[in-house]
Length: 119
Image 1 (cartoon, rainbow, N blue to C red):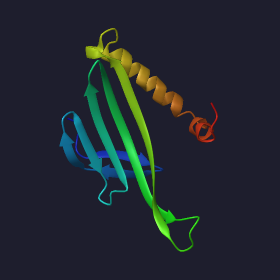
Image 2: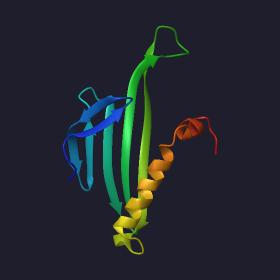
Image 3: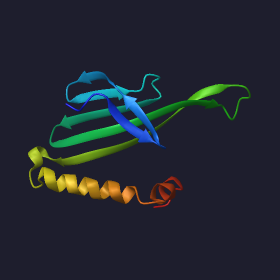
């Protein structure tokens, strides 16, 4: 089980998220205001899939209706998909691939280009 709370730093602000629910191979963590949450879950069928998902929400002005606010949401997530029991891949191999992928995504300007719909 992961430590409690989980902390994700966004733009220099540490978001401490205590565990708010635990289920079968899944846990959810959330800030006290619910604006930031983290879900970690696993499914095991013909393959092992692990999901780490960060959800964000905020209230903002509705651009179509004057003087009306609405809740907006965004999410960032990573899925690791591999054969059952790591067959063909060791945990170390998958961990190194994940670290390389995350480093690639962290390169300055990469996410900005993806958000600009470059492919």
